[in-house]
Length: 245
Image (cartoon, rainbow, N blue to C red):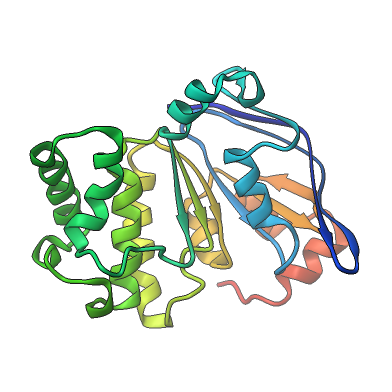
């Protein structure tokens, strides 16, 4: 499994209205096998942080002690094979069926069709889609599409899984089936970083919760500490939006 260290990370974007600082001096240390829940209001910088783990900008991102900035282009491509990224928009190939969508990155990696299809079918069975291998994305529900996207990332055997608000585009009744798959993954000891608005899910699954506001980390704590005893006024205001049992 992989350890991730983020040091002095900044990210800015140039817009027609000027420069927007999306991240400001972010520092995190995520131990191997940890599950981190990244929460905050829309526009706080959560998704930008996740993307910077895969594509470093100013500052450093170290995986297992080595900065991504020190890799050669070939080494960086290889390292990115160990990072599975799942987005809120499924990014499936509409002209290919479920099996071919999952196999596609394996083909790029040089796997034979026989081996790729064997691996894909095994994973699709695990997430309850073994009977949908010949279906096309347009024939799937939102929850099914997201499960295919998760399997496509898993087929590369990544050490790190990055989830960017993967339930945000789903109807409420479809959220549960995707969260159930993520719960199963959490039990496997993978290093996972989950950007989410599902507070109960973060509370139940994460080893640590990181609260981001206006590009800065305001709090980092165990879920029970953060949700029961937030230390900043901004976090208290944020949590007042949600109801917890």
